[in-house]
Amino acid sequence: MKIRMFRFSFLLALVLSGIFATSCATSKKFTYLMNMQLDSAYVATKAPETRFQVDDRLAVRVFCDEPELARPFNLTTGSDQQAHDASYLVENDGCIDFPVIGRVPVEGCTFKECENRIAAKISEMGYIKNPVVNVSLETFNVTVIGETTNSVLKIDQDRVNLLQVIAMSAGVNIEGNINQVIVVRTENGMRTAHTVDLQSAKLFDSPVFYLKQNDIVYIKPTGFRITPTGETILSVLGSAISFATLTAYIMVLLGR
Image 1 (cartoon, rainbow, N blue to C red):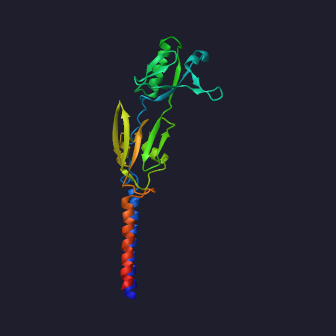
Image 2: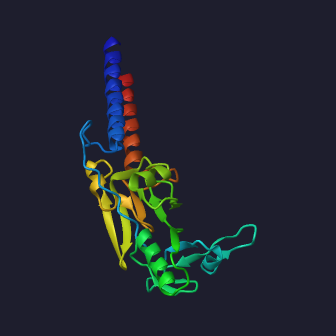
């Protein structure tokens, strides 16, 4: 009887050790920036300036010493109680159709370049001598799909990085593959897919660490889904095999 109990305890310990090892492996799988050395300095890449793209919507405000002169440029939409500045679409030719001065090319411009371009045209056409122009981007959206909370995030600032967007989406699900996060970017009429490893310190050097408007972030699964709760073939088979093995050992021991 003592021998039988010893064998059972030994086998149970093995199974529990396997479960513990699997748990440790899962924890390691979801450790971000694993190879980043503590207390070591890394060169911080500066965030690139946002440049306007086709289909962006810009809010533009013109100021000057005489408000009446600026009024024709500052159109609003909505009711008097809920009026807000009109926005202007960057059309397929890269231009916005701005009040009074007409079409202004802005595709590829930074905020400052766009503001200077509009101000120069207003001044050159003789409407205001020294106008001050403020431009904001109304459509800085990033789409996040896959093993996370699927959403279209509206970014309030003019720049955001990949880790911030993942945090906004409540992180990566347990079945997400953080070693192969895909970022799809559209530039100059071409779409390009970039792969990023969230466990690598090289993440900060990636051209898609700082996201641009209209980027798509896709968190790939590590296995094939087969249940509504998101379990995968690998996780279900692993659990089933562990349970079956433990049951078989217990039956063999008790039968002796």
